Structure formats: structure tokens, C-alpha cells
Image (tube, rainbow, N blue to C red):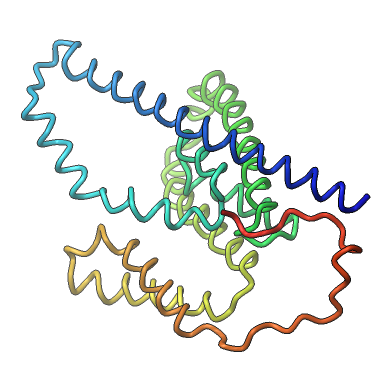
Length: 253
């Protein structure tokens, strides 16, 4: 019975991977085409007088400033989200301040470490829940009650809240990531590297401001690798393979 269940689980995951590998690129490509079509129409079809040279200049300026994010974000998010959830996240957007926190919180509450198949499925489900809640709250609190609600709040309160929203979001993400990862050595390395870059390197070399995140990720990965424990973890009390319950926590491919 256990062998049959495991085989069914493996077959289901294989079918899921095949579906993901087909529809993931298709949906992302459609999203890219729609986004580009809307932008190109706004630039050349609305009579704004934008020339091709101006468009190319603007695109190059943006790529020079933020192009590194297009490289570092997939590398940073993949270990937590997995392949299928990555397709969802990059099609939806607002990854760092909405989708990633939802995935990390869900994985931590369900006791699953990032990097497994079960963690990938949990992340995908959490993203779906986050989007549903986001659309619902946007419709109610922004579309219906937004103007009225903001008008009722004192201006100093709104100004104060804006100063704490982003730190609160990233603070929660960092805490949940630390709790889910459960690696003191990696956490200490990451905190030290980030602190040195933010408070020492960037003030001394301001031109590295937009590359600080990429440098922090790369340096943290390298230092964590060299300072990792060289002793393999011992396995105690391992049950026979035929008695093991089916589980889907093998590493994400």
C-alpha cells in the first residue's frame, strides 16, 4: 500500500512538473507581451511625442540602475519558492513585500524547511491565498472605501504609518526566514555582511548603492559555504524504507 501511494505521489509530481514547465513560460511570455504592448501604445500611440531614441535612452538608464535586480532576485527567491511558485510570483509581482512573506510564513507555520517539494507546494498555495486577500482588500478598502477612509485619518497619522510600513514588512520577512532556516551560522554571516555593506561600504563607495543587495547575497553565500559545518549530520533511528510514510520533501529540481 505504501509503495503504491509513493508511486502515485511521484507520478502526480511528475505530471505537475510537466504542466508547470509548459504553462509557466507561456503565461510569463503572455504577461510580457501584454505589458510591452501597453507601454508601447502609451509611448507611440497616445500622441505623447516620444521618439525611439528617447525610449531606448530611458530603457538603458533603467537597465543600468536596476538590471542587477533581474539577476539577483530569481537567485535569491528560488530556494524559498521553488520553480512553480516562481512562475506565479514573477507574473503577479510585489514579491518581496507580499508574496515572499506569505510563502515564508506558511512554510514556517507548517514546519517545512525551504528547498523541498512540499515547501514549493506550500509557497504556491500561500501565493494564491495572498493574491485572493490582496484583491479582496483592494476592492473593498481601496476601490470602495479607500478615498473615504484615507480622508478620515489625520495627516500626521498617515505620514507616520508610511515611515513604518516597509520596515515592518521586511522585519517580518527576516524573522520568518531566520526561524524557517534554523541556521545560526548562516544568519550571523548574513547579518554581519549586510551591516558592513550598509553602514561601511556603501557610505564609502556610494556608486555601489544599487549593487549592495547583489553583493550581500553573493558574499553571504560564499562565506556561508566556507564556514559551514564540515561534519555530516548523523542519522539516528532511521526506519526501514518499506515502513516510511509517503512524503514529498525531496529537494526541488
